Image (cartoon, rainbow, N blue to C red; front, side):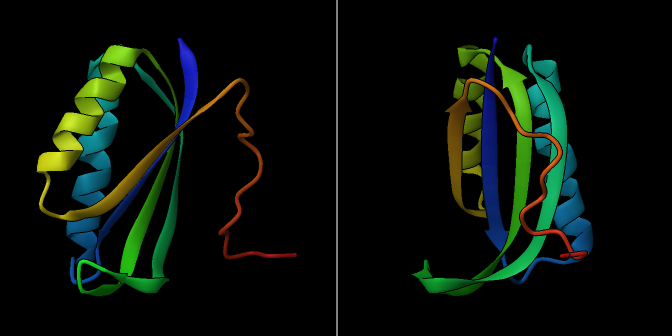
Length: 108
């Protein structure tokens, strides 16, 4: 299995309950398809530099996981069909940094 970071951007007009259900949905999807979620970071509502599908903001969810190619294919197909997701990106890594949180509220 390989290490991946998967970032989802959800629509800005969703309630916190909807964002939490999206997080739970994709966490379950990863775990049920031979993957393992190592860490989930909620980056919150962030501004876009340019509009994406007429949205100026989005809720960012960042998953750090260990998964196989079949898991990635399943995530990609489900994400494309999800109307609440504006964009997504998956990046492969040799080693994950689980300590650093780039968008944490306590910046020192």
